[in-house]
Length: 426
Image (cartoon, rainbow, N blue to C red; front, side, top):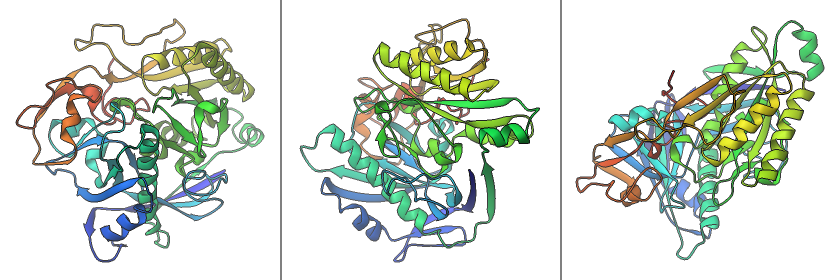
């Protein structure tokens, strides 16, 4: 599978009467975008805002972050099974608007949503403070249930990202990067002396608004399976999660998975990147046993020498992480696990809810319980009062002057377990 990513840098977004891209500026007709989204009968109102790096702006509560992309050539369309028909993607060319993103916010869906600060100390913990964000404030109709509310915001964000991405369909990209994965036979023939490495990508699928969608299917309804890494780049996996903001994999994270990026950089040089095994994180023990059995079976079937395993979430999913690690190591395959820590505010508590001696190569993305102080911002997009109820916040988190005292887990992407952040520990 071979995919070309055409990168189109966006340095600013400005409202205008016509949506277009000129040079490195994205001009947006906000009324046209709002009309494009308001066809959903579950939406009461849409407001579109622009949040730029360095602005004294806070976005709260954040539902999802999505990078605008568009298929230029090759099979399928962006976000298959969700916005477009079900068709395997990951080949041809896809244009990407680098430096910008769509952020969805509005009335809170579940308590596990978060904050993006565009300046101040909070901005240092999230990669999304470095982007020019088109913020879609989507308010649902009254009486809507949480699941319909979640889907409404999810689809609105994806549609907005596709709308922006489509503006770049006929633009010649400034830079084109090529990613290619070979079949098992081709890979062995091309790189006979390189270690074979696979990536086990654990997807949050615990239900109760903890869901991830693969080609439009809730992953908890699927068995562990194999996909090409380039399928991620075309939106085969999208976030439906309302989980702790610090380690949620937003749709942006799936589109820009850094583990995939780093493995591709070493592909054909230091290692043979065989592919991605996606597995779920269910609640019941028998489901965990089944999924981890299949993960171990599939990487063994691929005859790999090493595996990187990334987690999403904490607590209950720690068991899935350790099961995957133990069972793959038992096959004689070396593993490295990526996680984060909930080690208490003093950092002295047990970091994971489960552990095993086979997990002897661990990358941590930081301690989500660390307490931080977020100063007041001149502008708040969304609903600031939810600071007291989102995960990591508490009664009294929001001060009268607009400042917030909370645990690090309120910041979107702060301890992301794909490594798309700045924190770690040794």
